[in-house]
Length: 452
Image (cartoon, rainbow, N blue to C red; front, side, top):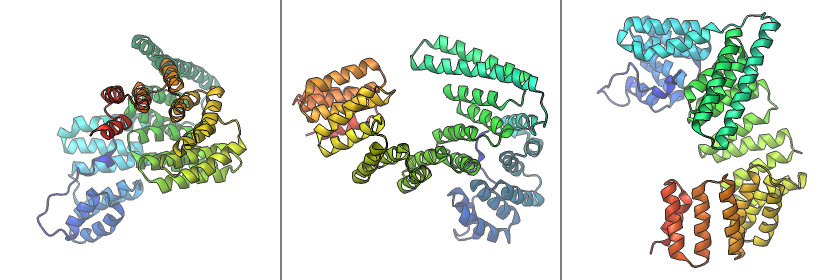
């Protein structure tokens, strides 16, 4: 279902010509500015002179705060004033949907269409999704083991097909072959759900397949079905949160991650994912706090220190980063991830001899992706040591491995040429990288620095 909270500009509010400090106007403006806490008080004041606008405004504010029960109460109060407003039923229907009361959601959506037939096309998908959710809830207390096993067998086969599809995509096999496997996977999922429509695993697998196909709204819907059936399974929330975050719907992503910690307070995955979201939002202090929680959960585990070091490196806090890296490598001296990051630290400090030891150690471990990242970082090391042939050899090797973006490798070629004093060739390389990927900040930065 499309997130109604992302469309708060659709409302019963009219453009008012009275002063901006009028409670009705201020209520409207605060809701639109997503100042939900402030809006609650302002809209309550507005309700004293205009119950319809005031209660509607509070309902929208509660929607923004994801307090579905309170939103339902406020929209119900507004409906009591004007029971002919289709929008109010749509908003309350969404609140019912997110609260998990799917049958009431269907009722409100259908009522909205009766009041405003022109809304039928827009509301139809909401009705369909709410009906689909109501069809699988509540889950019967007893389902035969034979039915469960037969359905799970089919969904496990679908899972194997989805894994095969991922490998094929990684190996860049022809799209026609990938689509054929996708079709088989969907067929197996349909088979599983025909046997047992309460198979949460099947919905989860279909969610992962839709995600791989970049059909994010459909993926969210499938994970929502899985959650409705298995509300205590944290992985369903994790995967749905990832999709919400990918679409920058951070409030919903954070709500799912909060549910994960509620179910299992000792699971570090929610804290890691929350840190990633805060980092994407440039809320570095909040991200740091979440990564600190990961360490507090397992102070003897090297992993948490590595994650926090990575965060500190990205924000340029090198001294705190090296402290975490050294702790990580003390706890796990063979960590290729730790060695690769410490190589980056030494490069930034100009200590290329130390960087070479760490990067080469990480490359030798030949870990998936980590070895490529370490080799990529070692190019900078070799440039610092003026070993240009070795730097170029690493770039060529990475081009053959095809795991690092081509435009980033072209930038590395440009940096080698620049260090050799071949400015024209370096400029051409940076231009080629930027043409390949107009968002390549490193190429743009280098070209800007080369301008007279």
